[in-house]
Image (cartoon, rainbow, N blue to C red; front, side, top):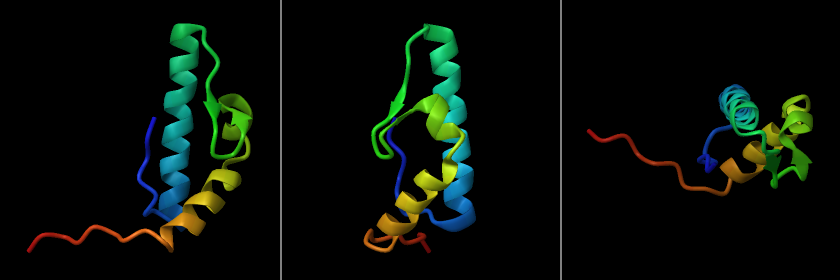
Length: 71
C-alpha cells in the first residue's frame, strides 16, 4: 500500500494505525504475511512498534512539499 508522507506527529500516528489495521485485515483474509519495508518488519511486529513508522513520516514530511488547499 502507498501512503502519502506529508503527515507528521499525531496525524502520522493515526495514518500508521489505519495502515497497520488494513495490513492485518489483508493478512487474515488472504493467509499471506505482510511486511512494512520502510521499517523492515512484518506487519504484526511493525503494528506493535508504530513509533518507527511515525519517525519515518516525521523525517520525510519535512522534505516533501505539502499540497496546497484550493481556494
